[in-house]
Length: 329
Image (cartoon, rainbow, N blue to C red; front, side, top):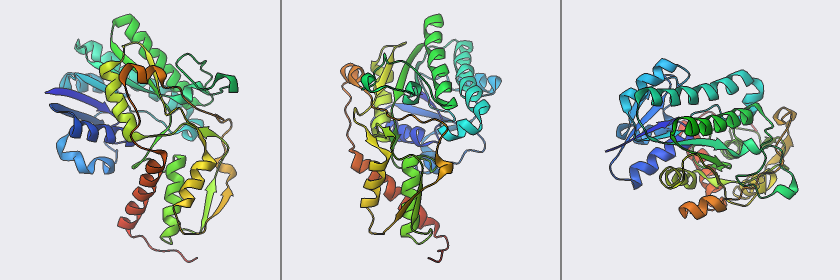
């Protein structure tokens, strides 16, 4: 059996990766890292098919015990504080926490004297300020991070490179652009809008959606395409290299919201909430996945419309199952 360790398995990406491996890969035994307070809602349907291990990755000794217990053949490092607005409120937790988790994991792997294949999930946010003549964004673009979260991912990126160069660890670095879909955390913009629409449809909220900057452009992919890309990356890409995973297309947040609104019969007003505006925002992200596609043959299977429709249906189903009280409108 091939032993696969997934950090952040209780998150959207980790849960979809585990599902993909269970469904499409034979002879795989999955070990997932969770913290004692982590919600298991995203993995309820597969909980009995995986091995869950409690471990705080910021604890070095805990990481050593984790790696020595599992002795993984593959490691997918997905765990991170990944919500950009929170990184403004808690820069210390984001910067130190994200880097510390990865450092402890790498050191535990060295301590155990094993040589697994490792994929580190990085982010398009690392690029930050991108100028029009630099589009689309590829592996060679300058990194100009515009948030504490983005800085933390640059640090993870460089640490992964250094550990490959210094110790020969088989680390593949992937900079994935925005990925969405069912189970996306409600604090993220696509999911937040979808949840608000579902709440309004059910009479749980007044027919007003509160928004931030709608002019920013993002390169969106379906999470189910991205986890398949991660599996291809760890198996086919060259350790030490960086690979952009993207759709190659960008849409404004306004376009994304307009599509979601087109999927409901309810009339909804849109209002800007100043509290949702960031001190500085990445205005445009559009990736160039040429290198990754040529290396792996990866292509997208889910359309933007299916991704957003599935996300909206996810919130409709989830809110219906809770059956909360209605509000007066």
